[in-house]
Length: 235
Figure 1 (cartoon, rainbow, N blue to C red):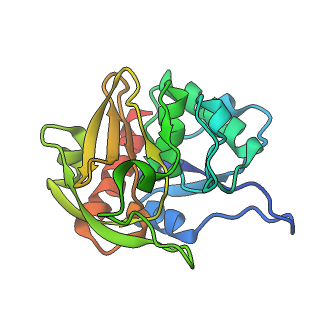
Figure 2 (cartoon, rainbow, N blue to C red; figure 1 turned 120 degrees about the vertical axis):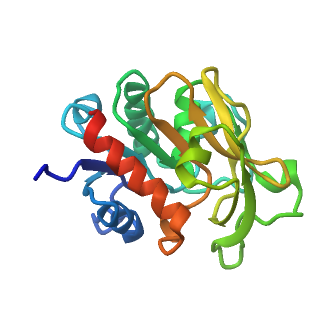
């Protein structure tokens, strides 16, 4: 029997107690799909070397990315900037762009991949897309569900086997410009970019929502299953 593919998942930096944290739902999603999960905290001495041992790579969600890294502007809503995590993940993403390792970006992870390829972000979604669709709830900050459309004839449509989806959304920023070599794969009804995928890379898919929070949904299960499956055969 072949061994389960090894999937690296990026994490938050250490907190004040010295703990490296990641919501367990990411690990659950990978393990349920048949993979082994390896957590990747920032400040690794050689990020690119990690790609030599991993079969797949997940860029997880988290705080905002420093707008200086993509030529953006500061906004009062920007929070949770982690310079160590930004530097580590952007370096890892740039290396992954030129490697054949399968990559899945989730929420912040989609934004990291876009910036690594030359894209920019919307600093605060309501300022651009209004409030017809809430992409997260505030006070307290928490996720919300809404519908979106998967564009036909995309890899994402093939993976999810649907063009309509109800998702768990938890973000206030989004990809503004699609980098060269990428295409849009999903959009919310307000026009916000919910998914992008690389046209030349063998398997690089990114979504703005949180599929790991929809573990009982067959479409979201398929996303992780296909990702882990291809990680076990491609790398």
